[in-house]
Length: 322
Ligand code: AHG
Ligand code: MN
Ligand code: MN
Image 1: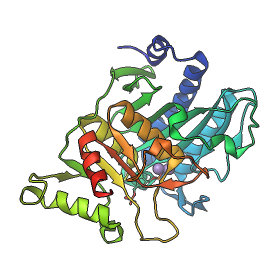
Image 2 (image 1 turned 45 degrees about the vertical axis):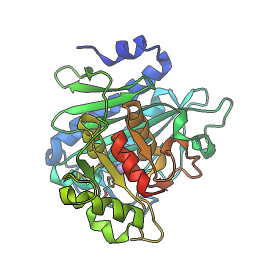
Image 3 (image 1 turned 90 degrees about the horizontal axis):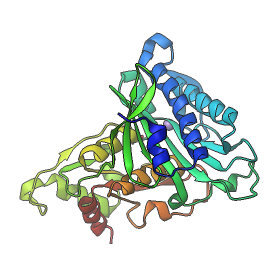
Image 4 (image 1 turned 90 degrees about the vertical axis):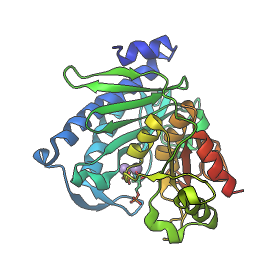
């Protein structure tokens, strides 16, 4: 099986970008180990703090953020970082070419129940001559990402990665610490019978999503004339991985549950990298009204509605939004 660096070199991926990706993965290997140790490493449970978005931080949110931040800034490969767990962007090497946005631990409500969690990352180029302390260097649409990926800490530790030449899976061989290529060019099947949504929010959705989900639930006696199955891991990283592996539609739509927070998922470090991985595997990623990767961000912690996955099913769902 092939290791990650030669696979990326063959693609013509710049050496500096490969080094940066390997730096992120060095932190992820450490996270994989800590998460795997569970209660033994004393990292389960919550802290007494909240992040800038008003979410209680789990001990693992803080630890994983610190690991990624330290290793990235020490490496010299990043001009700046943006993280879900940092109030503001953090400046790095002024001469570096790249910037990285990350969700250090996605699905943190799963930490204490030994269920799926992961790390999501997005790499972009810093504008030439830009100031590393200037937050606005992150205000680029997802289509300008040069690499995106996640590391899923499941029964095995799996990396999904794209540098714009397809989406690949690599599995961490824990016997020697290398990520080995286990699937070249993942393809999201165009058709699916599976959907993922937090159905407890149903009464708060907009009419388009209400109608779409009602029609799925009506099954073979409804307008879709077939039965659908539902899955919800409560970690986007787990749900998107399933969609990449066997198809499906995953959505976290706009809702009116909290008027101050109409959307849940964050554009820069959740929606954009997942959208690139899905599109590179032949799927679609939209907000319901526009392509996620076309959105011009205006804040680092900006949130968006997400509808992504199998091409035909996402198109059907988007039809309800017209
Ligand atoms: P995070 O753990 O980084 O805050 O993200 C959690 C997100 C996402 O991963 C998941 O799809 C969603 O929140 C789960 O939401 P519910 O709590 O509504 O299930
Ligand atoms: Mn998350
Ligand atoms: Mn998180």
